[in-house]
Length: 378
Image (tube, rainbow, N blue to C red; front, side, top):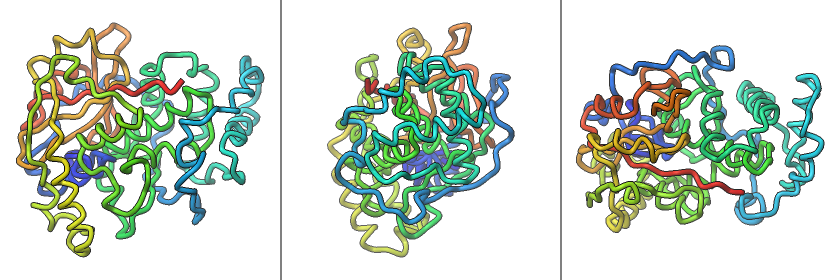
């Protein structure tokens, strides 16, 4: 949200925290919603050296993945990669050998010409995260614990807003060394979904990103991106990726007109310069009128700590006109059982706030939180 705002909108506002939700929606949004200035980070050091700032867009180097079939929706197909499990049970090998083994995992599952991990800093980081996942047998843990463990691997990664909107043409942006708030959530979830079913391949990770970021999992231009987080939750719940928990947790429902993107058209190059995009977003916003913002009021968050699980997706609901949320992150259950918040902070990097409710209470114009739980694909 640049202070991560809305999805796109948090991408726009969030757009880049963007449904990929968190970059601020626009600079204008920054004037309204701003994450807490006092973050109280937990003193946990990153697994990796200080990351290099880099955006890796279109990682497949011009190769277009199919929009239908096994690559388009890998999570609904059997996983032949499970057959490699015995060979991985007790890995006692060098980093280079393990790296090669991880690079080859999942290729039978992809059923496509081999698409190697890109030889970039982002590709190297992906490889190291998968080495960690294999070595720690993360697939044996609960889904929420997998999500938290993966999120932990990105502590210290740089925050950068508006990563999804660097190009006029919509491309599938993949980055693992810098994030806005939504990109962080999407990236961690996409990796965790593969790890849970022991599919460690890079193409599967990329497919999961696309599946989460675009309506019905299909990328078809700027308007196909899920720009508002309530829409992101609804669309991903429909396809079994997450479950909306706010009402189950005793939250309240708010009906609100969502039109921040079109009423702040001048803040988005994609809308200013392309009238077709603008008219499409106008139609999308009209369709969102059927959705409600289900949220837990800020003063009720602490009472629900026992019901929250590590890895639950948190979005900060706002009273800013036309906007649903201003920031996103993940529940972080600390060793002593307390509930924190791991997120790509506009303050500069991926970090952990010690107490979730305290953090939310210090976000300008926040009214509470949306909660969505990643669905276990196993």
